[in-house]
Length: 153
Length: 196
Image 1 (spheres, rainbow over the protein chains, first blue to last red):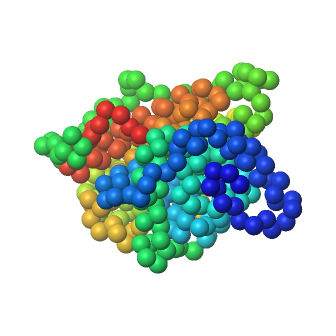
Image 2: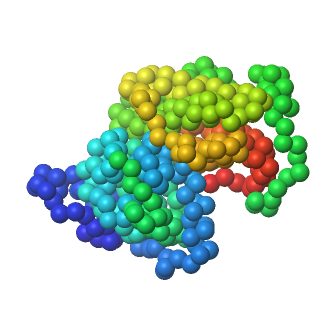
Image 3: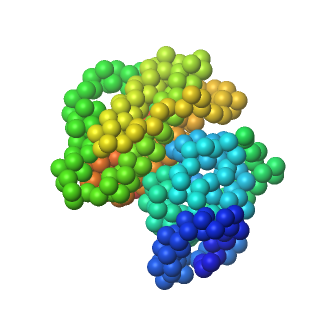
């Protein structure tokens, strides 16, 4: 798997086929994605900017509760399509087998509908690399279950 | 300029009176929006692939789900007992706008041959944190800000440009809600030249 998008082990051979379109797309975007690596560890200002950028997500998402979109508490290390208590995932997201981490989020947030065609997240993306880095840095801090947030079920 | 407070009267009664005078001017009615939405895709016939239409329907349904939640959120605010009479009137008016948005979007989804999502039976709101009128207004402002960003992010994704126009029309309404709520909260109602 290229570009740091770690996927969970395949549960069945047929599931691996569902990744092909996503992988092909990611391969096709290699130059763009390579230029959009996450920034180094965040400072306080970055975290503050990241929190502000997260307000863009507030129509559909919250840290500690499922809404139109899934809760973000526990996001890092979670396989896409598996937020507790959230049943409205698109098939594309459920089948993507992406595991959310800084790198996979960086790719997805740049252009969600291109990274996971068929996702319900009809959002053009956070195009600015520094804004994505700030957002991801803040998410990394704000979504630690039992530490900075509480998972709802 | 961001975060700067304006010394404007924090009085919703003026807005309530102005609301009664509204209803004309440069606005699209919900009916007009519903007629507009989906026009391109239908007129284009074979030009719009099934996948394109499906993609547009998917975006619309996500927006519809968020509109239903906004309607429910305003209901929570309206029933909280925390809003004064004038604020309540405007909150109910804003909720009415979201109902119109939802109605227009649902009609468009059906026109495109899709299945419009239903409102959820139950929504989870941070009601424990809503202890004052200010809390309710800040909560509403956060949702409206998110809605602006969501529609802004949806506009360029529609295959059918008429749907982009619909989304932009709704975006404008959400932006007005946000500005009014910020004004009443004593915050700069228009803190920047651009939205993101």
